[in-house]
Image (cartoon, rainbow, N blue to C red; front, side, top):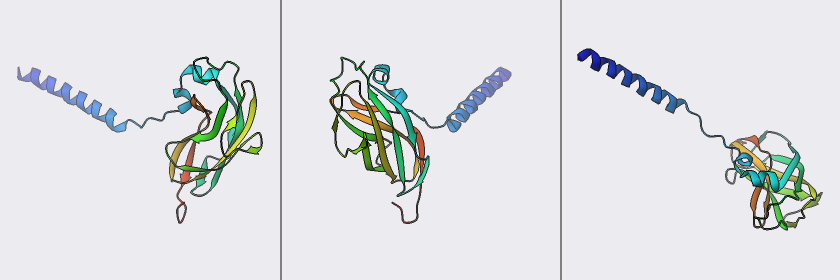
Length: 165
């Protein structure tokens, strides 16, 4: 009987040690916003192309520019309000960047703009690093009645600068 209990104890200790090792070495979740959206939003609303980030590392107070194109697709879902008014911005985890300039079609667009199905829009958005850290950033078009529609994202590192932001 004592030998059987010793075997059970060893198995229990081994399972506990394995569980603890897995729990302690598991990394944090690294979600990607554009993949987390419903497929009908990703495939039927807006298509982003030629999206580029000027860099993947900046210091606090330095600028990063995201450029590219987006098209309001003719396949816009009937379940959503028709696309008429939109706002260009970024999606990041909190107020870690400050938008300093946004343009659509080469024109400054500090506020909302009218959009049309089937049209292609060139865009650029410049942000300044505010809080040190590593952040996943997406260009986003916020369409009235539909919410944010995300473009491709990239990890951006904001390093501390002397004197801060």
